[in-house]
Length: 335
Image (tube, rainbow, N blue to C red; front, side, top):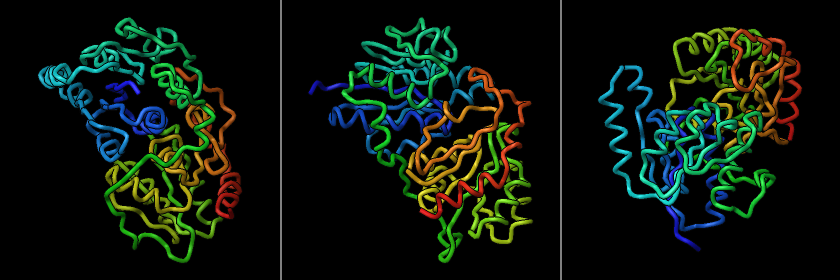
């Protein structure tokens, strides 16, 4: 087996990183000795740190530099990346101009990324020495899988994902006193990056009243805490979690019987760990943004979706009835 050193550039966000990490186990099946490093925004570092298939995690602070208008912080990150040990290949799985720039800065024999018509921001593609073509409309997990397969000539097929092993790990322990010993534990995720991706509080409340289960509600911001409080106010069989780190969230997901939420990072964690889940889609496409399975279900609104731009005024997720979610949940919990 030829020894190789590769660096993967996937900076953010939570769900996007999860959908890219699944490829690691298939790389290692092909070549156990390959060195895989990952470049990521600092906020998501702990998601990668404990993965045994990753050798080194290199963090950047691009969002912080932008937020603070700090050219010094930006240049410091660029210099740090430029000093890394030489790679055989750098693979940009993000498809943005900033990720293309980072890929070019890292010392390597070759850089690979999506071509001009395949990337979200195609103007960055001229920075790669090699490009890969796959429609931007295609499923995001399949895009990640196929660019890695192309890059490393992997003798595997996309259908092999059906047999994936869980690939998220945690060394933090969630407070087990928050879990029920007598009822099924269901994790509710009311928040999302956009209000249009959030399932209505009233529908969550109705769902908790229909299902005989114990509900744990998580939140990540003050606004999401308000949503959690409102659900819990009308749901006596629920518990609001304290704020959780990524490590703690991964650990909690591994302990529950079912996860329910919109198209948001924490919901995709369940898929990564083969935990039953129901993901609700309004202004985004379920068929593009996740891989449905017997235990990971999707429910979509009938809204038209533009993969290139989220319509923040599209609140069609409100059209998904709580009774439909209830039936899906009851089916999963009965298995």
